Length: 246
Image (cartoon, rainbow, N blue to C red; front, side, top):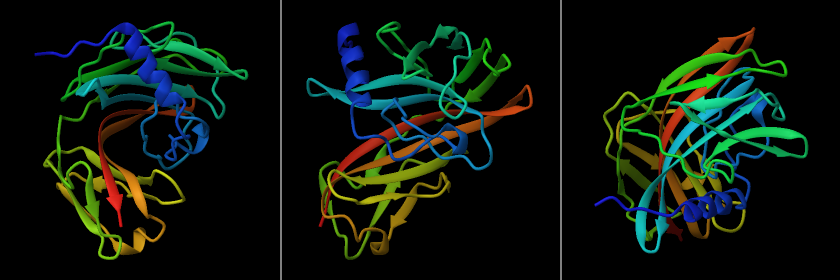
């Protein structure tokens, strides 16, 4: 049975995510700043003039794990108004903060937002403006997967490290993020192949002690050139596990 959440619940979820500690994984060299999606986005090498991301993640609502979709776009170093932006025909809400513009859905102006993943095409349309030449581009979403180890609420050893496993075997890339709930513990992998296994060594866990969040991210991405500038289109599925590192 599909789980249905109200529009108000969706809006509350996205703005709770925006109010969390600033996400340590930023979308690229020329897109530094707040990532209001609340989910990790890989860093892409080279000079990029914008990022357009579609993200599927799970949120626990009233004891149920519910799959949610977020779309996020930002143009330029600080965020400029690039006109209307949509993905698969759904308009992405435009938000202005201290004269900087970014795009996100769901939002207060666009509270109902759905997007198919599991291999679906995500087709972006950017109207253009303020130095952004209008363009269209497409990226294929990753396929659904599960994290098989560690299990949620497991305790792992910082002295010996631990292995992360997931249902792999696709052509998507994988990023693994481990962030301490308090203190300075933080680790992120480089771009990994989807082979279903990765070991986080003890040498990476020296600053961890206590509760932490493990996130396994499968993603596909492509670049789009428009008006002499390069934009990254990325689609990802995020699975999160709570751990204790002792």
